[in-house]
Amino acid sequence: MNIWKNDDKGDDKIIAFFNDMIYRVNPKQKDIEQVLFDFTVNKPPTSNYTAIPLRQIREINMEDNKDYIVVLFNRDSYEHLRIKDSFRRKEIFEYFKTNISNTHYTVTTYNKLETGKKPLIAMVVIVAICLWTLYIASTIEKGTNYNVQESGMLAKIVILIAASGIKNILLIFGSLSAIAFASFLYKTRSPKKVKKIIVH
Image (cartoon, rainbow, N blue to C red; front, side):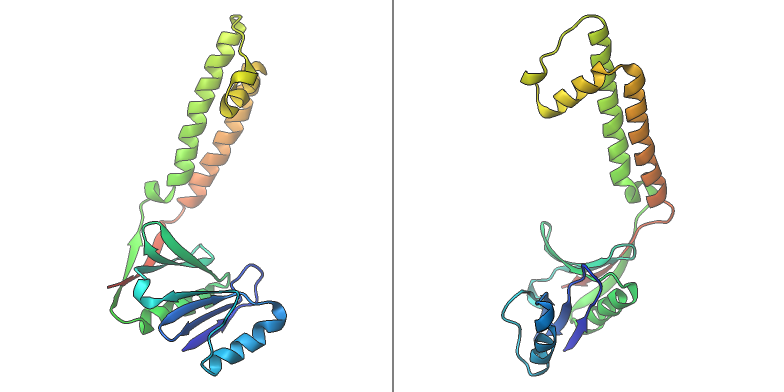
């Protein structure tokens, strides 16, 4: 058994490795010490907790620049253990690596394209919407009228931006593209590395 008490705002207040379960407990402030004591006398929590049986765990992942550990059950099911303190987060991960049986440890390193995938997709979407908006703007200049009320939400936004003129379109989408590009550069400064405990 091991118990970690976390004090940072937004953290899971108590994380415990207890009776082949990983516990995430978020009691009221006044109840924290009682929960900690209960663990020491072999009494699991009864409220404000999530208990994860080791037999259901497929992977435990940790990425250095994320303030949580991910416990995965299958492709679409997972829990986050929120720990902002990097030293404490690594300590908990290392404990899992050492004390959960039938596992192997691996580190997956992603290339720059994989690391910056989300802002890259954002840039593509921004460019596509920008081209659409410029097309609508050109048809408006030629006298085409659009019924905003009968359009979908995205189309309404595009029509309203298009109606503001090409200069404003380029200013708006240029700014959005610059933000997405800056995010891409920031994320790709160093390769993304995910440490994984694979459970067999």
